[in-house]
Length: 413
Image (cartoon, rainbow, N blue to C red; front, side, top):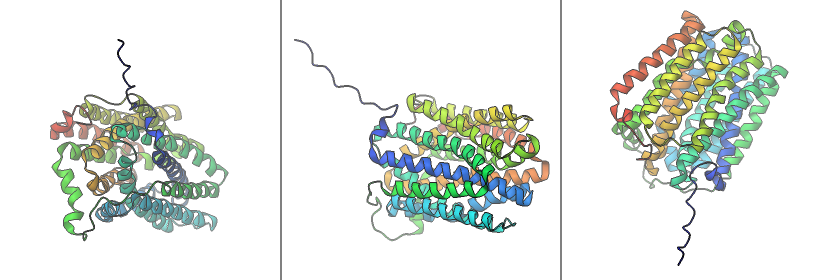
């Protein structure tokens, strides 16, 4: 008698997570918000440089975005665990659109000062402080647990594809007129807000108890008690903090590479191109073994690519180094995000994601401030090269300080 055919094995790779409606809405919101943020950043960088001609002013924009992340870190995590996460994310996207609208008004009125720009950057930073933990904590609830790594890779792909198209589109729109660039960002934020609002509501996972300092600091204690998580988050913080050169791209585009807004858009798109290609690869070929040492290797490559970009004097090699930089950063992001979300219980994901968001914000926005300040002292080339060297040193030091992370084999242990 012939044996009955066994059922087909479930699909855990490729596009499997897209079979879930709520995840598709999440992907749409993530893509559109990424598109809006990148178009906004390209326009803002070019506008601030036009108005001020100051590397420090470019860095201060990053600082204005970061400070709210730090101030509201603990409160935003509690909000993400206590309230409907998709509603919090929807309000956050709408607020980001309001910040972009404020910059648009400044452009239309020809305000020749960066001061109101800093205020709107702080508003956007506040929205991201509350939106990021809710968005990150929402993702694991949208798909079955066995599809989570696939969802992380696909979600990262959507974000990275938007960060390829966003800067290029923003640069082209800014060349037409700054009103077109900022107006498009406002519209994309609005649609992102509507998309994530349509996700099926999920009840809060935290019991209705009064907020307390003990609850607020629970995320910090949890991360500190998990050496692999703490090592992954802090490695990403210091590596990108030192190696972040994106704040200086307007200077490189205009003063070193002798190109215009379209060239700046191309430079901003290059890291996302490398990251998107890597994310798509990871969606189909998930990282199964030696995840810890792979992360350290990726951070080292990130540092080398940063040095290569810093020494570039032509557009083509600069784009090439930035593409490698983005690809290596995506590997680090994939390991960190999967590890943090997988190892964190759902009732704490908001607070842990809030702390994680502060580290991400510090590495990106505070890194932009650090780059702008260093460039004001040493020039843009010196700032970027020194940052790349610092990233290499951090990778080596963290490999020694966090052996648990270095020895981590499977992400989902």
